[in-house]
Length: 110
Image (cartoon, rainbow, N blue to C red; front, side, top):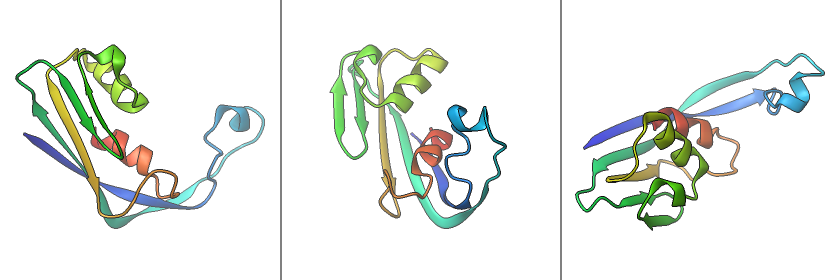
């Protein structure tokens, strides 16, 4: 089993300046810092050649192309992993839409 711990971050200013629609027209500046709260991801082989992903919901699927979570799907495509893995995530604080950089922390951990 592999476990990662990645700190959440808080942006003070500049949120959204990393979107292409914005930075193509305007210069961007971001000021952020990490905090002492983490997201933990566990990766473990799954011997039935299925995929199980547990985050705010749980996906039990047969193949990578059926994954709903876009970050997990892209990461598995990047490394060429088709099936046979379990990925779980837990955080010290709630993520998803809270403004604490949870999706970027999730991506770094993964």
